[in-house]
Image (cartoon, rainbow, N blue to C red; front, side, top):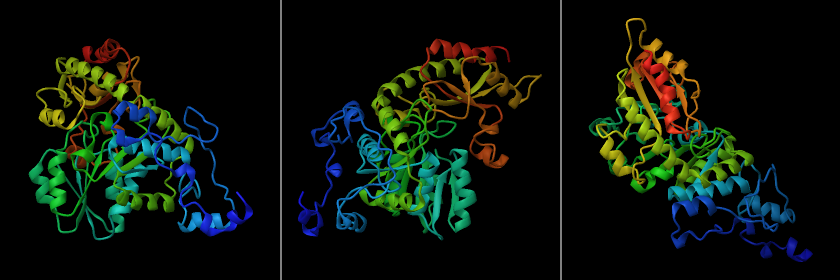
Length: 424
């Protein structure tokens, strides 16, 4: 490039080479596994086969005019890694393709994605309508902070379509749900909620963390925005924190502005980990679901288990709905809650703790979506900050245990759970 070209605004390329179209031509209708392995990548001049990690805070320009063009928007390209980063962009492109969305925006954590959603789509005087059955930290964010800034928040039972419709107000701007939910794996009727939202000019936001696009694509069912805690199944090995939103270009631009201005951005290394995790997502979810179906059958037939909350069971009230919404045959996720029987010598919490403490292999941790099976007592961990009334509304009892079924031999998972259950 000559000096005259460097300093001549008219000769500046409108699009940097590293911002060109996806290396995988998605118009050729590739399958999900191919997309998971190849979409979103742009190879540099080094010709690397695996995706590179761009651990850089900033970028260099050809001239002052080139820098100005990037900053004022005349030229699309990298500005600063709080705004854009090639490693993060690869993850965003791949996840968007898997969710069948136009664009994804990555965040520093799953809660960062939910906060971004709130700041992008809600303002003082608006109403957020959410399901009772949510992760405890989501409820804490809504109740303690969004209300502080003038957003009205109310909750309904995720199963009750009539309750959803009756709770809509003239100022309702967002309906928010998890499907499946934490920790009871309840299922929302996304198609119904989509119709309700479209009729009332409301955004439908669905947390797809437990199902992932390997099982369910909420955008195809009518949702406007999909939320992920990438920390869970998108990574799949409990290594790093991250989150994401997926939706239309317009909605994601609003989310991106929040992330750029608020600094809720994902690190390049974490993005690279998630990108590699997506390569095996479908295969892992098939194995997770296979194990979970067998564990659920064991639990439902155990005399010391009173209730199993898992949509893969044929008598679960949302079994047919989950079968319709989840496109993987036999895929109902790998998160379940089960309630244990108290005894004369133990109250409900003590009985649940006994089962948890009797495990020798299963990890006692609040994380989930890991290759390793994990177990926790929601009432005293993930939901302990909620009031007793709020826990009751969410179905989080003292007898409830949440299980995230991993990829170990399923016989070993069942034997480990039986240690405590058999001795209640």
